[in-house]
Each structure stands twice: as C-alpha cells, then as structure tokens.
Amino acid sequence: MVNEEGVDFKVWGEETGNQFSIVEHPIEPGRLVPSHVHSREDEFSFVLQGRVGARVGDEEATAGPGSYILKPRGILHTFWNAGPEPARIVEIISPAGFERFFDALGTAGETASDPAEFLQRRAELGEQYGLGFSDEWVAELTDRYQLKLLGE
Image (cartoon, rainbow, N blue to C red; front, side):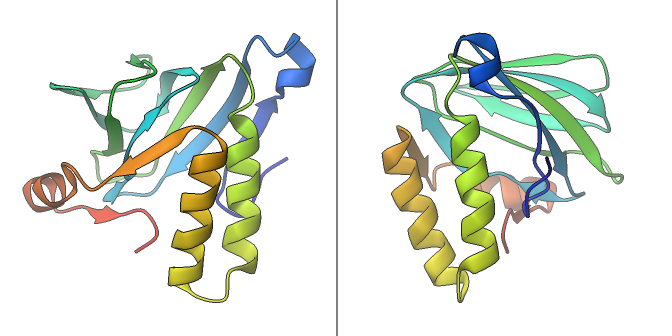
C-alpha cells in the first residue's frame, strides 16, 4: 500500500508481533524532512537510491546506496535528498507502531483544506505518536544546501 505522501508500507507491526515495521520513503531532490525526535522508537534507514544527507544530534553525513543511517530515539535528527535525482530509503522502525503515523499523515495530506490545517494535524499526530518537531537546523540546512522543507 502506498499513501498520498508516497510512503510504501512494506511490513506492518502486526506482522512481526509489533517488534518492528518497515516502510519505504521517496525523497524528492532538494527536500528536507523537518527536524524531529522520537520518544518511543529507533529508526534504521537503508539508502536504496540517490544520496541522502542526515544530521543526527551533532553528527552530519551523506550516505549513498547500500548505506545505513541510525536515528536513535531521544536524539533530534533530520534527513534530506542530497543529490540531483530522486532518493529512496527503507526504514526499519523498532518497536513497531510508528508506521501508523505515516498512514495517518497521508490521510491528513489528502483531506486538509490548506497548509496550515495540515501542519496542525501533523503536530497533533506527533503528540499522539510521541514525535516532537523542531525548527532547529532548518534555516541552516536549507541555506547551506539550497533545500526546501518537505511540504513547501
């Protein structure tokens, strides 16, 4: 199943006894995912296609196909498409459950009447799923790498 945001749900938590879930994300060239921190799960990203930049805490790196990026719970992180072509990552989420955030976010993207309503609903979903958003790093990264925040 692929939702409005382009997330391809590969393995739902119910299929693994809620030990983990797997989703695939497309990342358009020049797009930055808002900085955020998870309180409940760790994410392990595997780069399938393109080049993905990531900042996790104080560390920043660029990863190509075949590379992993670890995004532990409790640590602010963000990632972006660092190349000129589309990028794709597979995310292993442990424990499972956060894949439901992406499912609900896709519905919010389809049904929100305007960008402000979408951002409000995203914030509400973040609270529900233990995800905190931050503007930290956004201006710095968008300026340095000529990025646009996802959703702009």
